[in-house]
Image (cartoon, rainbow, N blue to C red; front, top):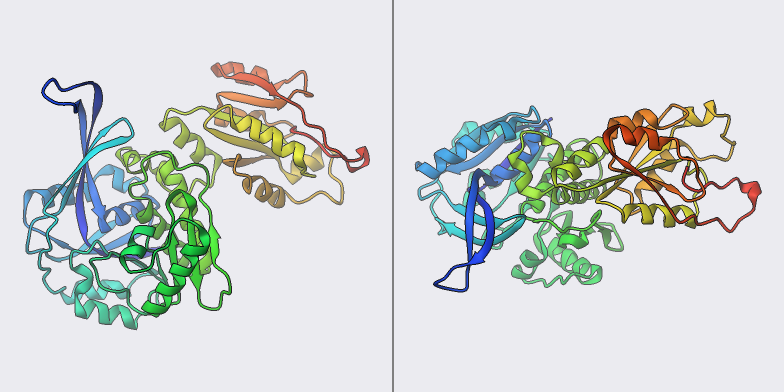
Length: 455
């Protein structure tokens, strides 16, 4: 897939250290800096996230002639950017001013202070024709407007207005209005308020703000993003707001989550998905991005942590990278009931992610344990993933989940208290994992329905 990213590119610098005392000359923490990491920000971050997902990107931006710009270009070509095998091709014009630099001083996963340099508006030279031509040769377009003038270019705007490619526009209060050809515009709550439409954080108010912005901008769809509450979509022809909640809790640094959402939504639109499905993909990608460490995870060359965590391996890798505990369990889940939900919720509270090893259709048939009324493996998988306590599902074809367990190597294996002995405990012992039981919650139904608790 090819995606063109248009917008203002910044240099983001993270200074990461520890703090265990206050300065003697003032009540401020003394931070001992242990490492420094530079990366592309703004439209450059969107390009980085897309490249890490294997997308070939053309970055249409403005670049200054200064040392921060050279660091920025080096960050775009860093191994952590190329980790997903996607390429970034620069189609740049001149930024007639300093490169904007945002330096964050972080202690652990918390930002203590941010220092902005070169943030004043600087003129942007007109884009050359080759840069404009790269816009046409794409499957989708992302505009990442950071209010520094790139999206003001009149020829660029006229070209965008004539395109019928999927276009995701992430606006900025200091920038121009999105073009009418934008497929989806994604302001956050603060940006919606700056545009004159207070969204709040409840879906009703956010939905009204999204609807007002959609009409004011004359675009087909606007999604107001609500941070850890997800996003609310207003779309022409849709009678009620469409709400996509975040998966899990957004406890880590949320910097870059909006860029991740826009990138994933553009991929989904480029693949032919609907706007609603693209927004869902974007919100879920942002959820996984934040839970895996956010922009801090971009220091790793392994791209697994910053795209949609739709496989068990990705969830486990992201959890381990953040120093978390991996919990797993197994079962048929062919007739789901409240007992299942209680047991799974109890298992999830024992760690930082829960992976369910699910008997596939082939496994159930081999065990001669499938009835004509049993849902398909895909239906059972989707039902489990709809639960907030379940982070991932892995299907296994064998009679027992031993191979899946060895592949995932969970720290904790959980079964309901009714299941003894637990043969999987011998597998867990191979790498020092532990096996525990949680309370057994029976189903209030007849035995004839053959309802099973976990496993």
